[in-house]
Image (cartoon, rainbow, N blue to C red; front, side):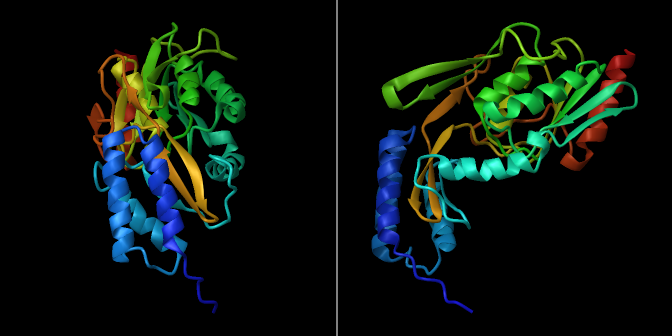
Length: 301
């Protein structure tokens, strides 16, 4: 059995602290947490043998100030490339290729109720537009639709807007991103035109959520809920509303730092820390049956 090579924590901590200070969407928190990392380093708290253990310890400290679940030191089993964001993209691509492009299930239930499962992520739109369009066009003829996000861990905000575009009738303001760099904002809107056919904005729509639902998947549920377009059924989601970028700080470690925050045009806030609260709370395992029952009742009325 090979003994793991002891990792040198100082370069990792120094670079993580620098990235945090330069890019984190909350500058005051960045200064506070960067100082904590340096103190913990000096105390020897990060003197561990393995990169995976260092990632766990540093992530706990990164999230200690405000519980931001996007703020992480992420361990990768395989060596990761140095280009910014490349580590995450490589991992996502592997999942994309083994999940039918992020749409592992399209099914028609009794009574004209369709289910479209989006998992494990909302992949970059340049990859996912074709499978998403095919699935949502197929489901457009259903009398009611259930979008299953229980196993979705997040992804691309542009893909959120793409999916919403099939579920609305008119171009709609969905979200605003407030970015630290340049102190600028960027609005997200549904598209005026989509490939294929829309399910539209009037037929019954339900979204399933769980404690696993995170990040961009939360945005999809939250946007539709705040617009009054969908009923969210299931469990509160994890509560991560800050878009992030990733930087390689070690051959097996990636620092992910939120560089902006979401502001919903209806609520004026977001789901950070609280998660998306379901309209119909129930265990995630029961949410599909509950949504189907609600859909059939709505169709009957």
